[in-house]
Length: 525
Image (cartoon, rainbow, N blue to C red; front, side, top):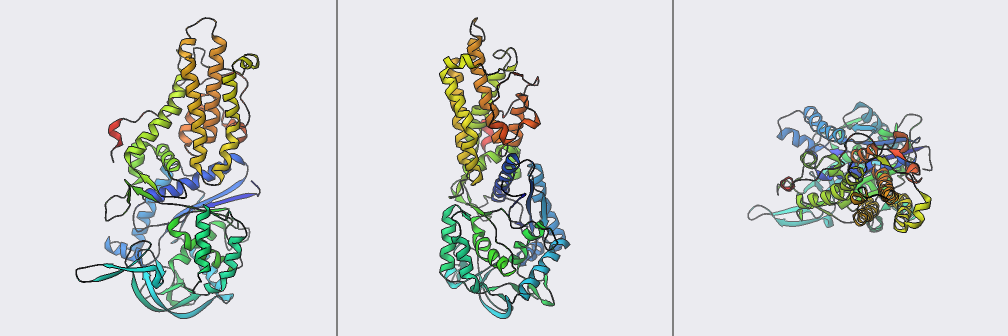
């Protein structure tokens, strides 16, 4: 894929609460891209980093509320994220916790690089701070809303969370000096941040002017974090600490580090941190900014914003129990388009999975491998002579052959749903071919073996290619399909999908169901 290594990341997730569906969407999207690259370049070394963000005032407060020490609280919630990722077969290579000694070493070194470069100074920060978001806000980023009876509450416009006025002597980062460099970076390519609307938004924010950024907090107020080297009266700002996790995963500051990342996968709520603060920090430290940022939108639940106050937080653990890990992955990637918010509802999950995984994919496999239809239990070879007459099958096989080239660019740009659109189109065409030719009747009729074999070959070839290119999205289900077709482990790379299966092969003996239909009652949350 153009370099010896591929490096993809998710943000590290804040441990103030258990994982929700938005966290899971981010990690599943990154995992899918990681799997795509592994299929395209099986011998390429890759790094896929994720983890948990465990410092800051919000964690202090959450641990206190739970009557736990911060160490215990963080370990417990971090474990929930890791357990979720492991149970979902997320192929991460690095799981970074900001409480790890290795990470603290990295952050201290990074701080010293910024200080030695003259990019930090001691100053007084006066302004609004949102503890829940761990973010500094300007007056224009806040608004007044009714609070307690007779009171007005100041909140963040973006999140709606309360803010408080803060005046502290902190270390400041000279962000204002990097305005031109940041704009030059964003203008160097239209594809640095995708979708393009988010790159335009970043350029607008930067063009409006940047103020220097407070990068520490008084340790008397925020003690749970990494002390500023040489000044234990200050704690390093949680976002500087957290963003440096990517350096930790890279091996920084040791020799042989992998840098820069090929892709940061993030949610739109943290675009400013990754598209302004982070590249500016890196430039100040003499490091390259990320090559690409894929920014996805958020999830609504039954057309409402997901929030604790509404009690509509969706737990991925619970949804996996209902729909399986692959079923949930498929829905999130099929419905979660990067450029606009998605809507999560049990009814839509149920309908989509039954229509596309149980019927379009699973039922096609069952029909074409059923002993009453496929009595020889074979994946028939390609009969060139007969296919000259079977023009409909020939046309469909051409669509199947073109499928990898259609899907690849969609996957690589992060528009997984468009790749799945193309796959589902081919599978619908294949189901129509089967329905119209009725192989269950051909199997009973003498003199119809050539047509039966042609229909089965076309259908099973569509399933083979579709399953190979769907492995990054639904790895377990795709593996079941390929197992039934008796496709070896060494025949499942992207290049194998680009080559036609010409020769006859036997099917696996075991009865395999790709994705059984969900019962109606399973649709309720």
